Amino acid sequence: MTLVEENEVYQTCFHSNLFLGGFKSYADITHRYDDLARKHGIAVVRARAERIDRDKKEVVLSTGQRLPYDRLVVAPGIDLKYDLRPAGRRRPRRRCPMAGSPAGTARSSGRSSTPSPMAGSSSWSRRPIAGDMPKSAFSANSQAKVAAMTIRGELTGARTFPARYVNTCWSLVETDDAIKVGGRYEAKDGKIAATETFVSQPDEAADLRKANQAENIGWYEAISADMFG
Ligand SMILES: Cc1cc2nc3c(=O)[nH]c(=O)nc-3n(C[C@H](O)[C@H](O)[C@H](O)COP(=O)(O)OP(=O)(O)OC[C@H]3O[C@@H](n4cnc5c(N)ncnc54)[C@H](O)[C@@H]3O)c2cc1C
Image (cartoon, rainbow, N blue to C red; front, side, top):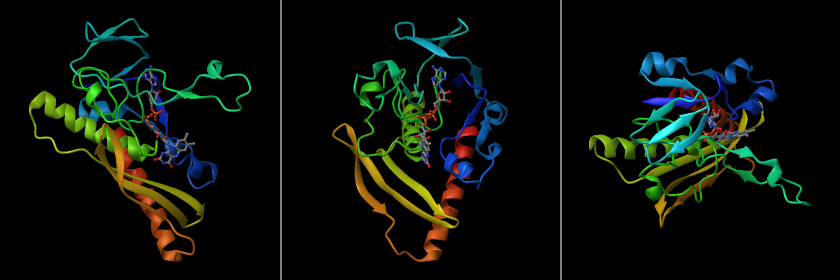
């Protein structure tokens, strides 16, 4: 399994608000990829994925190297293309630089890839699109796990299960006062559709809001461990 990542470290956008608010340090939201190799045997290639040669099933890197793959997951996040901004529009349109969408754990990976929601390769047409799910790291991670299960099934014949997704997003209003919104989702008619949603209500008990923030902190620990080993 190979992870192609152009940056040496990853600063999480999620919880950057806690950094800005003085609740976390910059080091707290900065992660390295070393443990993926050391603990999990994932080959981390530090380069930019420039191109996908689908005929040869190879990823062409900025170093000139060509990485062969059996399954390829493309998860470059989003970027802004300022030159696409039409005259008079106040905000630039958001575009994906390659093909991906939120993924959580995987970038562009060759051979029996790491998880991600939307993928190049043979499985592309069978992936439901994000639909009702917010474009959060929680969603990306949930979608990545479904993608990983599907790919494992394809490669090893392991049992797969119907896709189920979850999401929660927390917002810290004040110290120990967090609200949240989220839901459960499943694939329906080629899209991800909400089956159940929830949102914090005004005038909730202080204990509940404090518990929300504890969940938020626990979630960050869990997703960081998922992503970086
Ligand atoms: C300010 C802010 C606050 C947020 N807060 C929250 C929150 O509280 N909770 C939450 O759940 N979500 C939050 N999000 C959303 C969350 O950050 C994203 O949904 C999540 O990071 C998407 O994950 P991803 O893996 O798809 O993309 P990214 O996290 O963007 O990762 C993409 C990776 O691909 C690499 N890459 C890109 N192109 C290439 C290439 N060609 N070759 C090699 N590598 C490449 C990049 O270097 C990067 O490491 C927030 C976002 C922002 C901007």
